[in-house]
Length: 122
Image 1 (cartoon, rainbow, N blue to C red):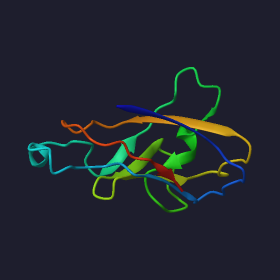
Image 2: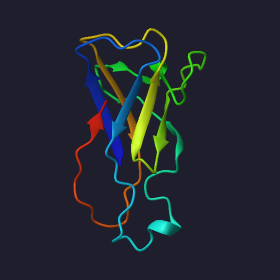
Image 3: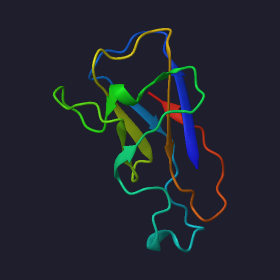
């Protein structure tokens, strides 16, 4: 699935702030093949993309997949499969209040039916 995310902040976030999107269910006991394949993604850097046709600012030049003030923007986040979350580390001047930012990323669904979950952005 491709997840398209647009956020608009009511307060500015400075550089080196960490954004986390959590709530991704990474396995289910009803899936007999879960151990033999990657049902979402392996933990590690996850490529982000621009949302075609979006009028929001792109987040790609403002994030990286690891912490540290000297790390350059990579347009990537860090996906933690075990915890079911995507972490974005802000670079540059951070994000402005009242501005919409967008990005997209793809994860593969497990091969069995799952109950819906409510994601959380922090």
